[in-house]
Amino acid sequence: MNNKLTFITLLILSFISKEINAQSHYIVVIDRINNTQTFKQKEFKNGRPLETDIKTPDVKKGDIITVRMINFNELIYGLYVQGKLIEKPKSIVSDVLKASDDMLDTYSMSPAMGKLTNLLKYPPTITRGESGEKSAASLHKRLVKVIKEVAETEAAYNDISNDEGLTLEELKNRINDLDSKFNSKSIVNEYKKIEKDVQQSADSTDADWASILETTNDYEENDIEDIGTKIHDFKKALDQVDFISETTFIVEENESRYSSSDVVYEKFNIKANVYKRVEPITTRSIADTKKQYKQDEYHNPDDQLNQSFDLNLKVKNKYAPYFGIAVNRIFVPNNRFSYSTVYDYFSDSVKFKSTSVGGPKTAIGLSLNFDIPLHSQNLSFAGSLGYTMAFWKSALGNDAESSNKKGFVTTGISIGHKKFKYINLAVGAAWGEYSQLSSKYQADKFIENNLSDAEISAAVSKKIKPAFYLGLNINL
Image (cartoon, rainbow, N blue to C red; front, side, top):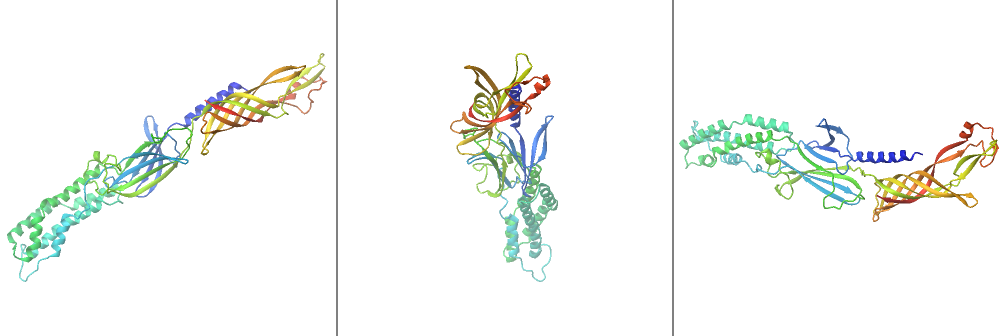
């Protein structure tokens, strides 16, 4: 068996294993509204990023993970993402945070709604003969119409800005529709006319004028203009967001954990928690909304957990191969032989002389080991591929001895205790090449030499057969 070929094979396997451990970039796409998860792999082609749809990936330490939340209204929500490598039986936490902070309170009752309630609670009494645009009943009706339009617009604005089920396109359509229906300038002008008419016609001693005077005295034109400004600012805020929030991190152990090659990880857990802002964003610039959303700072402590997406990705326990010095005891069966051809003095007779190569042999060599992710509290396991050479002496008779050597390819499993990282017990099969005599001939007996050279050569063939071995691997 070619020794050089065996070593070249080991080196190629080592190189391939390192290539397998190359870093990958996976994207987890979570649709908040539809509650679905899809996956992509990000690669670079000619220097440009390319995202390809894939099935659920298996990850490994060193991979890049991007959690992309779509249909995610960052004006209403904050995103808090956790990534954990879960080991058997322990887990290591790697927290990555991203999203937004809070701003404007739009949950309180609008100013117009309070005034409208008061107006409707105390309508003026309509007396016979009263007429004209400046009568209490007429001005009350005109004032209710204006305040009602403002109140309904404020209510619609609050509904839109806090609606959790709208996509970005739907949200833009609704706010644009509201903006087109609400003309704050014309409403302010109408309100000014009403205020002027009230000042000219109101009788402060008449109970019918009480709610009208209270409204015009307390309610300001700026209150009407404010809702128009809110709508305008909210439209600008929507132009700065994409309803996509991303967090990118590396699959790695927590820095506080002592790294060990013995650790076997079962899965990588991703938790994407969506927090409902108690104070939604309506005018904040996009630069400010991109602040990290952390649970110890930047966010309002009253924000409520609204949704939680829990996802587990299987971990590929890819280990870099390592070499070891192998000291083995190979138990070769006694029926294994090597053969040589012996001619008598006149070469008219020939025999096939057998030399036993059976029995236990001590061998030393090199092994290439691959860790196997079989979980045990105290034991570690590895597959092993190696080449080992056995040396021994055999008797020739008359107290003479000859030196022999033989190479074996070994395949097996090594088992070690985690307290002793550099020494493993190895067991498996040692594959060697042996001679086999054709059944036409009897070994160690002269026969008439009427055979051609080709027939003599064909009488002995080579066979590869396994033998059991037990040994120690000293890991390098």
